[in-house]
Structures are given as C-alpha cells and as structure tokens.
Length: 211
Picture 1: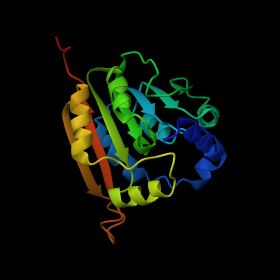
Picture 2 (picture 1 turned 45 degrees about the vertical axis):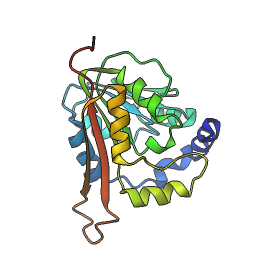
Picture 3 (picture 1 turned 135 degrees about the horizontal axis):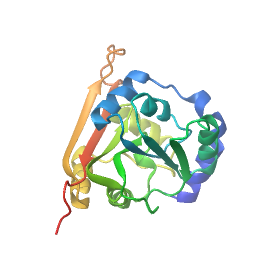
C-alpha cells in the first residue's frame, strides 16, 4: 500500500466527503457503547476524517477530543465544522508514528483500519497513548463481506480487514489485555442479516506497567 496515494485520495475526496456519507446514529452509538465511553473521558479519534464521530462523542460528555487524520484537507474541514468547540482539536499526522501523550481513556479507529499500511505499528503506537485501563476500539459500520467488497474497489489504498483471531493476536502481542470482538445486527435493517452486521473489536491497556 502506498501511503502517499492514501493521502492524495483522501485529500481529493475530502470536499465531498460529508455529502457522500450515510451517518447512522444507531450504528455509531452501538460502537460507542462497546468502547466503554463515559462522560469526562478524553478521546483519541484516529482517522477522524471530517469529524464524523465528534458530535456523538460530545453528546456523550467527552471532556476532550483529539481527532487525527493523515489527510490535511480532511483536518481543515473538520476544524472549520467544529471551530466553536474548544474541547476539540484536529491534528494532521500519521497515527502509526505520531508521538501522543499517555493521556487518553478511549481511542477509537472507526471505518479506517484497512487503510493503515503497518497495522501492528499502529496498535503499538496507540497503546502508548492510553492511560492504564484505557480502551482501544477498532470498529466498522458494515459487515466483513461488505467491507471486503468496498476495499477491493479501492485497491492501492487499503487492505482486507484481518480475521478476528489475527487482530486479537496482534493486539495481545502489543500488550493489550481483555481483547474481545463483537458483531451485531442493526435493528433498523433486519431484512438482510448478512448485509447489516457490524464489526467491532475492543482491547484495554494494562492497569499497571509491566516489569
């Protein structure tokens, strides 16, 4: 995967991004439920795009939000949309290598994991941003079959989502604990169970430093 191609594509798509998104509050709130988000939490929103999750995080009482995206145009739009929210910041950076302070209770990677070229490096780096007991949630608002079809259509800027067992193994090798995976059906779309399943994986930072 070519990282510069990923940046170019998302910069090119940024201006039409919100108009082309179908934001389903039920799906997002189920994902945030799974993340363990609580009022007062500090949140690291990885691959934040134009800030799609920001209103939902604020509605749940997030004390602060740092949205991170590798595409500068995405960040510019996000800053403009949420310029009146003093507790929200957006940073254009590569989340695989960026230096984050260890100050977050929640880290969320929403609809973005297949676009990272070194996913194990990403997981390791995000663990360093979590406070003891904090959680990382990797989530998508569609099922695996739909994800595979979508990412097959954008070759060169994404890879298939790894099997749940492999993602779990990566997380545990990085030092995460209490790793779990979930898939569920959206109650508003029960006609086709295969097409409306959602995927989410959550893991926690250790509550104490390892020797």
